[in-house]
Image 1 (tube, rainbow, N blue to C red):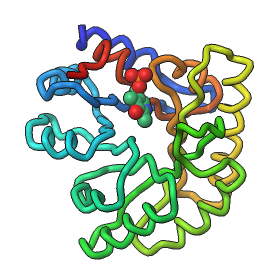
Image 2: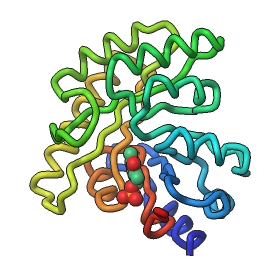
Image 3: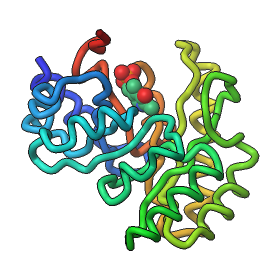
Length: 221
Ligand SMILES: *Cc1c(COP(=O)(O)O)cnc(C)c1O
């Protein structure tokens, strides 16, 4: 089942209307190492974790050397466990975290890549910078010595109402294009989960994070 889902999704994601290849990141929270490795064997090249503990517990068991993304809320005191092992910190949602990532990266002699998380729906339950603060956040974060901004990440509100979702997704693409004009390193717009990724890609996302549609329902125990 996982294998079929991966093959089908890899074919389906394709390109967005801007002619950009869409990267499929498997959101692996609560999944077993065995299932994650099945997905990788079927073609998954990028995996995203939400929890530092899971990231650490599963790290050595994962085969195929996928790119490791961190996509969840990250406490500053746990940053040290991820440094040097993470391809992309997608969920930089506050200055304090950006500063800690840069400090720890510098200390380890590496440069880390990140996305700035934008709370596009202005939801209390979600992290991220306010949309209007995006350019200022970009300016401050890109000035840090060991952290490079590679783009933006967002989670749309949980609704099926395309009249709500589409304008928000388009606003994200607009901000992404504005940043891309001033910074050649900007290359990822990470937006889209199992329920809304098609709409997000149509609006210009080039990175989707899928869990349920690859693995089925999550295994909480
Ligand atoms: C869990 C999660 C996803 C994937 O969610 P699905 O609806 O299962 O596809 C994507 N992004 C983040 C940040 C997540 O926590």
